Length: 204
Image 1 (cartoon, rainbow, N blue to C red):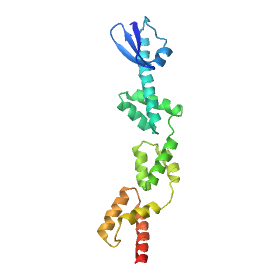
Image 2: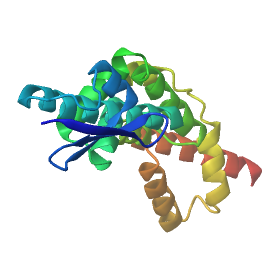
Image 3: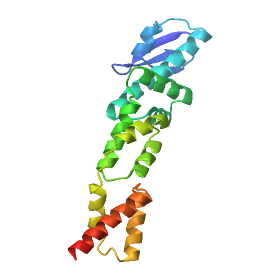
Image 4: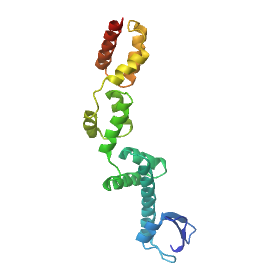
């Protein structure tokens, strides 16, 4: 197998054209590292190395693009790479590569998720759901959740804005179900409702 031409399609991308008509999408970095040039003969081992390194180089580029857009977990990055058409082995390789180079900081990401959802007034249960959904390793949860503020004011304001009559059982049931979906535990809901009832009776 012989390389008939190297076509640079962008500042970082190169298409390697072979004499059997095949074209392999690659990167300038991969071509340089593999010391490819027009006219070079490739045996089966060389061709396999070209295909593998080209796939990995393209995936590394995509991984850098993705992590530059927002924080994410290793699990999220691997899934996004698979969604972009990379095979599982390549996705896992690039995820490990990104983690080794500090492009993924799952501990910081877990803390950011906790702060974000706590600030929106969600309870610990909902925050845990988000940590699961986003693929944050379970061993990072407790440290992140331990920094969750114990401020009940958001919960109290949420109840005050939606509950008109604390004696209306149907209204209280619907509100309690809504709070449960937002991740609050039953005890937290009961305590908040007791505070609201006490204030309601005091105002009366």
